[in-house]
Image (cartoon, rainbow, N blue to C red; front, side):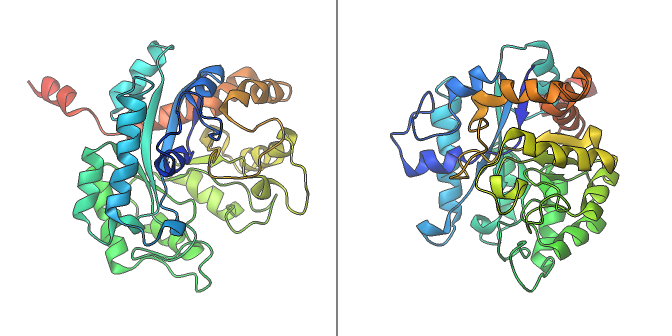
Length: 323
């Protein structure tokens, strides 16, 4: 059973360590060997600019995009996913593996909306507005004032709609979430967030937010961050993920569930679910409780259907159709 994972931070680790091998780097959660062992059809690679390296800049965004291009794509490990037509190919050619780029927080765009089109042209297809705190576009979920979007941030929403970039509400403030839900013209995703009613962490989604994402025909990537799964415990197991799945299903979201591990963005792991090579074991656990068709939906069918519907069409395909 093939898998799609909607969030990892390995690009920032590889940028930090130019010698880190994507094939089998011992300090990386996501490696080519583990993607193959876990049979991942698609991995989403986030560009994350850690504040420990100073003020986020567009130069650092470009540097991580170059890591993806030079050390993953050009090295022959993965194909870049850019167009909806490629999703159809992915379903047919089940031995090929793809990567797609996302931006985790727009801080590095420095308020320049022209960079949005440039990033799209360079392969970015998903964009989270904030990390945990405020930036020029909106407030993050840990910003105490809980503000929404700035005027420039609202222009960012429009620019993403024009270019075809899908917006991601993980890390966005409550006020920002509801403002985006009202303003958006397209479905949005939460790439790596769980259910707040199961684990009351501010990064998780309330029942009302989950219902809103479902109503928007969006997607929710259940994440493997231990403290988003259970609070106040030392040990978290794969079984502890199940109540989050149950809650989203209870709210009507069975067809809107996917996974966004946050591998390489964490320094503690679910015991037995520490890297993408563990996905087959996790699938076996899910199959003990749910029908195969449902599990297959969560692992790949749901997110691939979403991407086939909402990624832009290839300009080449559109030209040939018009001709």
